[in-house]
Image (tube, rainbow, N blue to C red; front, side, top):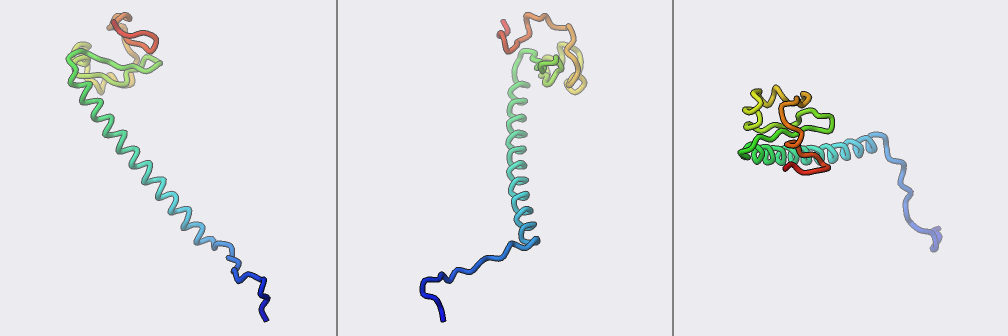
Length: 109
């Protein structure tokens, strides 16, 4: 006999290790796809920014907070006499006057 007040719901067994592993793999695939999409967006943005920087007629060198060159346009490369790839990551030399360097605290003249 069945109890009229009892529910017919079944108790789900604990997920098997294979099922849990499959779920984890699925989540990792989703995360990987999101990271790859973000990477492509960053690469596209970098290419657009670099193209714009290269189109500027003034020499522009961008340095990080430690004074290392992180970006250099062709005009700046020509003015200092070294190729961009040779300058990247190197410490900025004293070739430009400090008043010509833009910082976060003040703008270039």
